[in-house]
Amino acid sequence: MTELNADTGDPSEAHNRAALQVAARRNIEQITGALSRISDGTYGACTKCHQNIPAERLEILPHAQFCVSCQAKHNG
Image 1 (cartoon, rainbow, N blue to C red):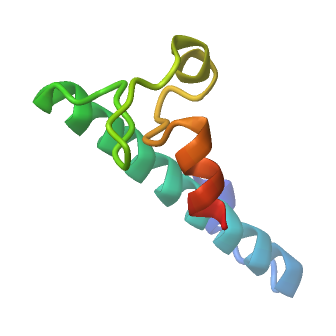
Image 2 (cartoon, rainbow, N blue to C red):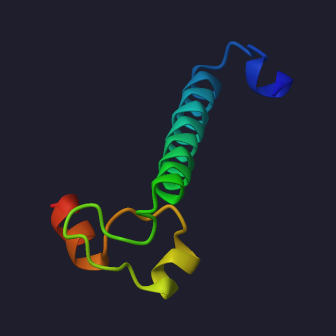
Image 3 (cartoon, rainbow, N blue to C red):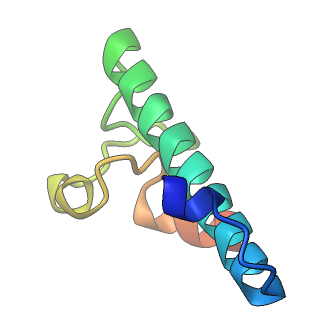
C-alpha cells in the first residue's frame, strides 16, 4: 500500500491510484453484502425476483445479488 500512496507527480499515476481505490471499495461493498446475505439467510436468492441464483453463477461470482435475467435488466 505504501507504493499506492507514493506521489510521483504523474497525473496518470494519481488517476490509476484513484481507480484502484474505487475498485477496492466496490469489491469490499460487494463482499460485505454477500456476507450480510449469508448472515440473514438470503444468500443465493436474487434480491429482485427472489428466485434462486444458479450455483454455477455463484461459483463464478460469489457476491452476485441478482439472477442473470434481473442483472441484465439492472444493467439496462
